[in-house]
Image (cartoon, rainbow, N blue to C red):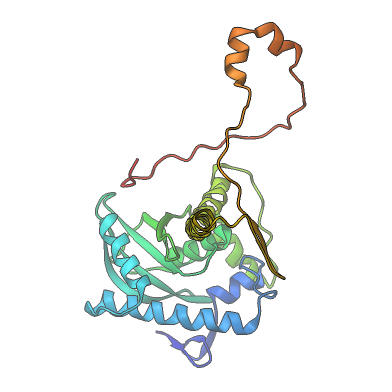
Length: 296
């Protein structure tokens, strides 16, 4: 029976030390590189992440409700997507590698079991996430959680998301484990497929978060400038200046501009004569479709 030592973060099977999924991925260049991140910041995020994981584990195993907002976000995702958690913090292993998956359960909509991983960071490494969950799926032997299984990431950030994860092909998992047994470094073949769009989706989530923050900041900026504008207008102040700022009041006025659409319609020969041709670089246009449950 595989045992996990939290203090040394090691897995053992009858005194044999097994490499962890995290160590395996790092060794073969499949994990996220945090070497450039400040150690104090990493430790702080790790402590917060551990607390969130423990709350979710307690909720799944006993129904205990904690106090973090991430637990509430997680519960909301479970209800919205009709997911039924069965077990949390499950140790999975074979003869050389072991790990602890966050949870597995049942997807009532798709009538399939799922394996889920909790992430609380700002961004996700989609390739590392695929490998992590695929390795857990490969190692999971629980008879109550039969294949095929769906892989999900619960991204508990500012905009909580349930993200479907594309599995790594089983033969690639076995090739990685074979390399580990032989003492060789696994080299992942890079193939451009539709799966690469997952990275674009992750970027969209980050952009959504940033846009939400920017909208809030812009609303506060507008509120403050409207207050200043009203004060200057009422009191007849044209300009204010100190060592750090200069504010000028500009009264309302009419601006004359050319209606290019109307000009092209009424005087197309004039519009053509004064049209300017310029080169535009090639690009792609991406239209994000509304997700299920989102308001139009």
